[in-house]
Image (cartoon, rainbow, N blue to C red; front, side, top):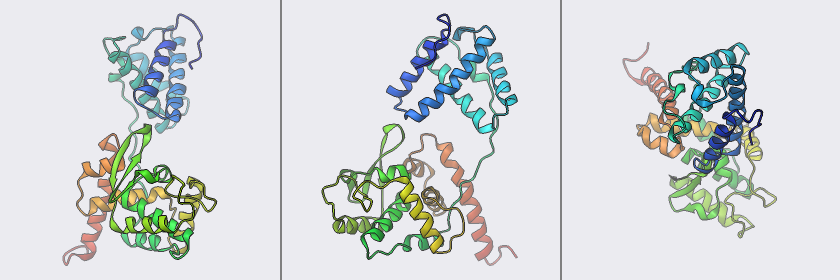
Length: 300
């Protein structure tokens, strides 16, 4: 998988072993593994220019120089941060496997990224969006069921379109997330009733997928994405709305109403709670706005 330059460069086998571990042990998707591969080959080339061909020769100083070199090349802060993650994961793997005693990457600081707050919808806007499809037709009923389930569970659109009927249970469903990891996610009565009505009405009862296109094939991200945008426009939501917007609304609205952060993390399928914590800021701002609007001694 790696590009072998010199047989003496031990980074070739180190990277190859790390990527194999990512695929087999961590179950990372091919896209994530390829990103690691590209970034680590760049690190290998940089270190080789410094006459460093063995992981044991690397010190925090060289890794810090690599970070500065990436910055001078004009890479964005997000891209530099991604390179740093790949580098840290590689050296963590080498320590855990006994190839290194010390991890030189622990002392290397990365760029401080500003927290980007995801766009979301108010509860009133979500209500309008969910009510937009015509629930008399099979296509409209399917769209209504998908929208309702997306907001009821907060799952990713890629997870939504890959739900099989066997994963659908009364009050909860099995979701296959990133890296093939499964989690159980509850849903409410409204979503359950709509999905059940759609399953009863649809023509192809033997197809194993939960949601089908008009051609009887599994729904695609692009198809559903376009339909969400169309419904948002129809109800007068003049912002960029996507299926992911409903995932953000799910998390924000739960926290506004007092849900536990750890529970929201589990339902969203975030491996790190810091990813979920960004929603607490949105919830706090919204609560402050509500207080100012409705409290008798709020904002004047």
